[in-house]
Amino acid sequence: MTAAATHAESSHVDIAADRVAKVYAQAIIDAAEAAGCRREVLAELGMLARDVLPKVPDAAAVFASPKVAPVEKSRIIDRLAQGKLKPTTTNALHVLARHGRLGLLSTVVQAAERLANERDGKREATFTTAVPLDAAEQARIVGETEKALAASLVPSFVVDPAIIGGLVVRVGDTIYDQSVATGLARLGGRLHARNVQAIQSGEYSWHS
Image (cartoon, rainbow, N blue to C red):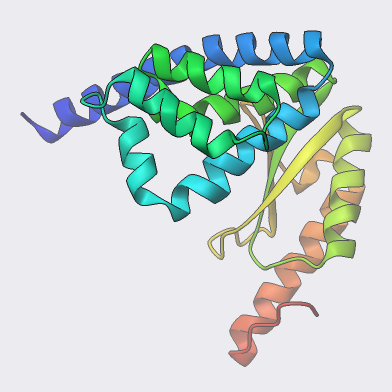
């Protein structure tokens, strides 16, 4: 198989997984909203996907393995829950197990979080900067972007030294540079100046 074919097959699998994850994510969100516990269910599923399973590789492998019977996976889920999880959370895990989709838990959680944000009128935004920002700068940049786009954002920050211009903002499928708003242009200019200074001095300041 050629590299191109392998890449195409991998992309196809990823797309298929995303589509499947969205179906389960919507069912989970609908059930949690009906039970009045959406926030708690998302938090519990997120904890399992991001905190618990990565620390227990054997459990994660069992969840993902098609060779392990769904009933055995359900027993593991019951042991993990032990009255600590909301019934809706436990039921969601059992449904994923029954349909052989527990290996997609992280993808399902991400899809559910995106859907919840959409229903709350929030849009996910990724801010890529050449240097790390302190909390005040992050708050300022988010505020400027929300004002410019007239939208409520759920921000995440990424550092990429290759962004010489200082700032790139991605909201959904749309990418903005610092020209999106005057305030962002000022911040982008400051970040660019910081890059120049770091290059000249050979120093890399994390907070200045």
